[in-house]
Image (cartoon, rainbow, N blue to C red; front, side, top):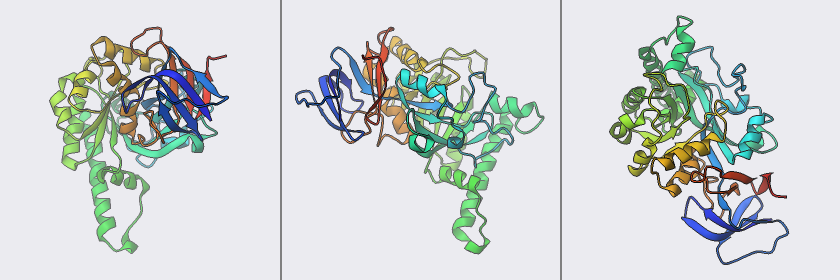
Length: 382
């Protein structure tokens, strides 16, 4: 049992509780109150501190990319389309990436294959602490990764292979979806003795059946490509990176887009690819009802950047409580794991982070305690 007393609680579900108390039992949140207290030898005094759900990073590669980018175990760049591979097989949970995630309050990450391929493979949701990948993984199949733009062009264009152009990228995505539809038709309509199982096409079928979205690395005018393809095949998708989203508000809102996962800022500006850094677009998209989240792209950027980026949204005029949601419940919803994480509610996993200072508002705000499944896994308390 663990008790957190007296904090200012951002619940990401039921508003803000001033001087609130949280009771944690068996790894779950069992009670929340601003009047009731509980006797417990394991009590954290959170007076004058901010208590919020553990940060959920909706786009990451931690544990699968080396910091020098020389070891990319999450990039199976042997074919422009590899829907059959799964990210959770490549994650080194002993990586220092996870220790850094804990230090900066990130308790759950969507860990995706890299963007070297047009279709990269299955994305998984992983907690930042546990015995091993089987213990830490919440869901092995939350999305199918795809990538538009310079990354797949850069990989396969150098080999003089498809795709060396944006036309080629669109063709690869459409061809996969067409093959997936044919596979589903064959599976549903033909004699089972004539049916040949294909794991990669099974994952494409999950997208076509709207069991999972396509998670698309996508910037600027490439957004129009995935919007058009998604409409043609009636699939759901998220736009990740999303630099330049402010040019396409209406198109995004009127599409099958189920979330904008923005970031990171502070990257090299390349015209036509990532030449427009407009994180303030999250404010307008949020107002229009789009599910918006902020991401790290770790380890490509440092995990503390997720709070820095939240501060940028606040600097441009975003409402603070809604910005906290972009770090917590919104990414959890995008990842389909909001039944367990992303908010402080009775019955949910006790994944909680405690800040000294107000994150996204105070430039010197820092994490003093991170809790996962009711266990203190990082602490600056004596």
